[in-house]
Image 1 (cartoon, rainbow, N blue to C red):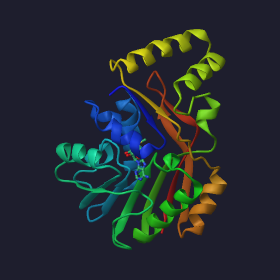
Image 2 (cartoon, rainbow, N blue to C red):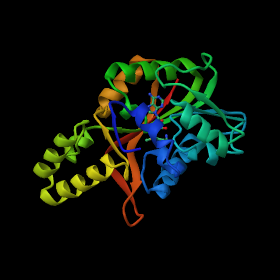
Image 3 (cartoon, rainbow, N blue to C red):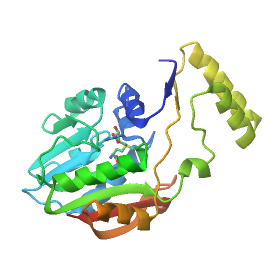
Image 4 (spheres, protein in one colour):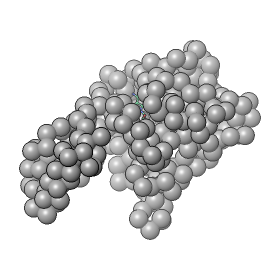
Length: 256
Ligand SMILES: C[S@@+](CC[C@H](N)C(=O)[O-])C[C@H]1O[C@@H](n2cnc3c(N)ncnc32)[C@H](O)[C@@H]1O
């Protein structure tokens, strides 16, 4: 797989599902400990009980669903592509996986007691997609259901980190030279040549990041029928493994 050009995240995760390393499906490259940490915090925050039905929307590498074994009566993972679903079914045969987008959930209305949607809404194309996703979560949630919506940034992290978003090799090289200097640009040039020769795979993606201040996200969710229980700064692990607050991301717990 040489150079792949993409314009959205669903296709990006379809490509990730083809990697030999299943953890790439969680989107945190070479950071398995971070995925475990993030999902263990969700597990604590949601306080699952036996008899609960847990739906993890955009369930990545299945980490949360694996950790929730024995803690709820039914586990359902929603994942956008067939490639991801097939991969997950091989490692978690006792979990139900459904291929769908968060904007259109194949679940009965008022059928779920616990919904997790972590690090997913920031990947949607537009505000109307995020509204559709919030409406769908409100529709499938039972009365008093708990809904965790995690890792919503309050600013565009790509812009802040000067990350290139686009599908043109030349623009990428120009962007790197301008923002990082000649060395990284030349390094990328070498990788692109290897990509052209089919010796390295590189993904160029023009998709942007949804972001909203807490006030705006809470307003959007409230308009879709969710009630805020609490929200807090998302926590992650730094390079030494210490727990730190995220600079931009927030986690939210809603009730129906
Ligand atoms: C960054 S990963 C997060 C995985 C997991 N929730 C976690 O926090 O470890 C993003 C996940 O969202 C999924 N995804 C992307 N777009 C989606 C959409 N429109 N609907 C549902 N899931 C989506 C991807 O397939 C991937 O599993």
